[in-house]
Image (cartoon, rainbow, N blue to C red; front, top):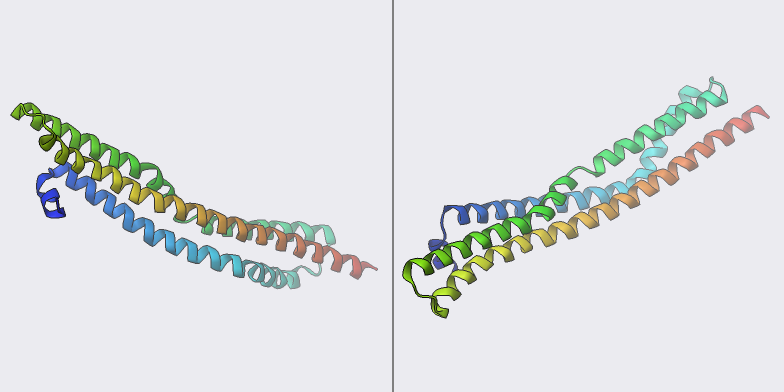
Amino acid sequence: MDFTQYWQATDFLAKSLFFILLTLSVATWVVGILRLIQSRKLAKTVAQQLTDNIRGEQTQLTNLPTEQQKTITEQHLLQQINRYRFDSEKGLSVLGTTAAIAPFIGLFGTVWGIFHALHRIGETGQAGLGQVAAPVGEALIMTGLGLAVAIPAVILYNLAVRFNRKALHIANDTAHSLLSDVLTRQTQNIH
């Protein structure tokens, strides 16, 4: 059975499910690849961005007492890291949702197809292998499509989360180092 025969044999609901899965697949690949590129870029640039940002802030804080400088610097670092975290999570909900629902959409398509196969058997009264194999095979295609959409979504989601963790780990390490530098400089200025 080729695709045109399959397409002609399906009803509106099965075609709709096919287009939903196709849309989710395209969205998964586009969002997933963009997310991976952005997360890798963030991991490479986050340390320098934080450093440049804090160095710019430090010139404005030199006249404040050490404790205030420390507090303001900590708050600024936390704010920047939270922005990085927010930016790094963009698109992950698309990947996670697709990974979670695509198998169920495919399964629903399979159940719908099997229902139609059984309905045809009931109408004709014939339940031979020839009458059952093609409709059930058509129905199982939807399960395969659901899995074909979900598996890349899971892989891309996990890769993006891993890259994001690396970027945030670098950001936190850099923040601790920058805060330590601020305190060290203040201690040196006092003595």
